[in-house]
Amino acid sequence: ECLGDTGSAAFEAALAEGWELTRRLPLPCWGDTAEDLTIWRRRGGGVPRGGGAAADHPVLRCDSCGKAGSLQPATVRDKPGLLRRCRYCRLACYCSAACARRGDAEHKKCHAVRMIGAPPPADFGGPEYHTCCV
Image 1 (cartoon, rainbow, N blue to C red):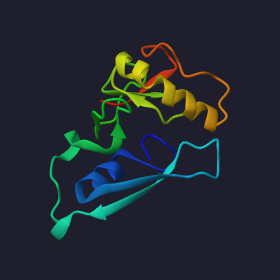
Image 2: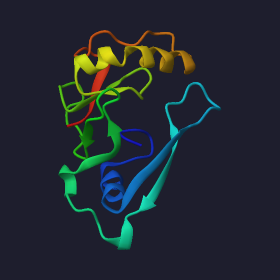
Image 3: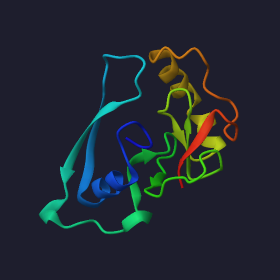
């Protein structure tokens, strides 16, 4: 899990190197969690993808345009980077203010399902979003 309780940058790099994400399924049991079930497949023949630390993140992508994050974690979490994540739901990720505006309707639904009282943040560059990868 990216910058969460159980993941690490080394684990994410190893995962991206030898595995590919095939499916994501929401977990319907808890409204206050941002997690989902991910199903992975080992890359064919055990051949690593290559790319090292600059490779695309295996999971994090802009929720509007699909632009992939990188495996390089942000060193300063409140500076602009490739992807910024909502501090409230910890799920919505966007690469720009325009993408955040386009994803606002779905982001509101996400907050409602997770019983988050705060509306999705309006200021993409403000403190309600943090940089999750560069």
